[in-house]
Image (cartoon, rainbow, N blue to C red; front, side):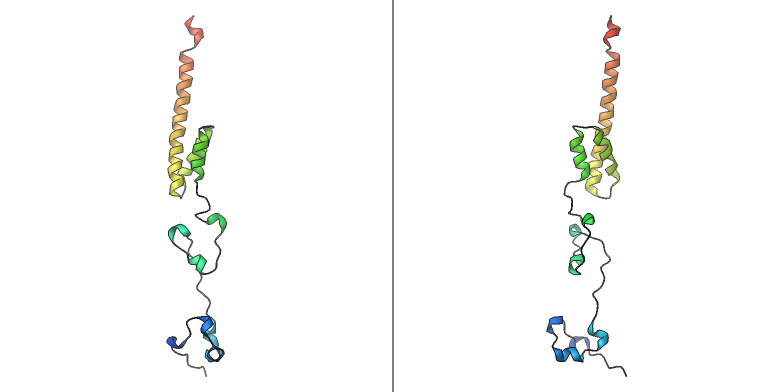
Amino acid sequence: MASKLPPSNDLPQHPTAVTPSQAAAIPASVAFVPPPQNTSVGGPDNGDDAHRASGEREPLLRRQDYRNIPIAAVLFAVGWLTPMLWFYGAWFASSSDHREVWWGKINILMSIFFISLSFYVAFAIIVNNPRDSI
């Protein structure tokens, strides 16, 4: 016959507190209880430290604190030297990171500014052609 399980308050609360005599008294069905599996995906930014408590390592590329500067911000800054990078930075406006979205919108504005400035310069060159003034 199956032995009766002891009440939950009789079970030791910490594994190091179990003496050999207590370990012999614990039925095999409750001697090892695996820890619950962590299925949530979170990072240190949202306060979810369950992956650290369970001993799991979070993949490096999924960590929220891996990159402190958004890529769209770097493309915006370097875009002052190479304005075509603003067009690439505009793709980040559809990102899931709110910082990337903000910098992506700024890159869209600068892309529109660059196109407008290019048309204005082209129009000024065509209108002020020195061959027409003779």
